[in-house]
Image (cartoon, rainbow, N blue to C red; front, side, top):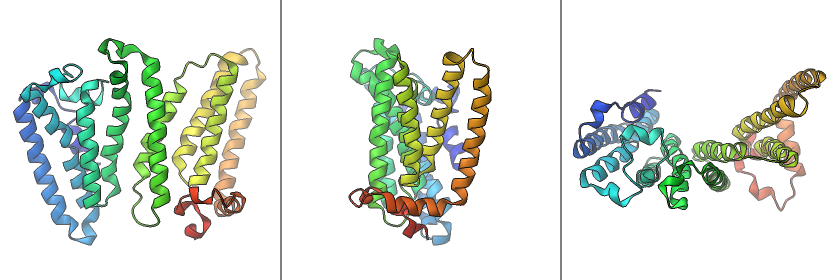
Length: 309
């Protein structure tokens, strides 16, 4: 929480007075924060018992990279070579703008370098957020014209496919990681968010496509067991509930018994969740048996019953 407050203070919650400092002052401020927090984190990292606060301080240092890039570009007047002036720095966290791409690339590279030197998974939160932002901002690059900002369909498709790419990367990291820190944690979260949001906000015109959407969400719940990643079950369950809500409001709006049927389904899902939780080890063991040997390599080490024991 402390690390997030500092990140927010130097980003999301910056005010107009802060932005009036000018480009060079903003870059210098970001550089000073980066140097101080990186030095403090590096000193604490040497002590094995202080790795958590050290990693948090290093993560704060990495989060200053977008501010440094923003200030430098502003001071040198480089925004004219991007997709227009992006406005104040705090807009980076709330508006889609193609100009932000350079800051997002810098944040990702800084996070990767930092996590290579200091293997602390929380640092990848910065990279995951930057990649999520990038999935939206890239849409404006693909449209080629800033006037296409409101072309929601393109932005939705970019977000969905970008999310699939991040999920593939996170899955690959899981397969390659046998032991050690869980580096794929944040990548899975933001990959699922980008993919699921892009898929959910599609304008499905037919009942078949809406049903396919429900099946995909059910598949995500199954994938959560396959990968032992609960985030897929969370978004999958929300997706199924969204589809059932659509049925209640549109398809069966004149059927009074449908609401009672949904209540029964909800209670059944809760009961199934309790049953799975109580027999989680058995379920994972059964999946180990059912998955063909040719596909077993796709399951991360932490998802197999041997590793759970």
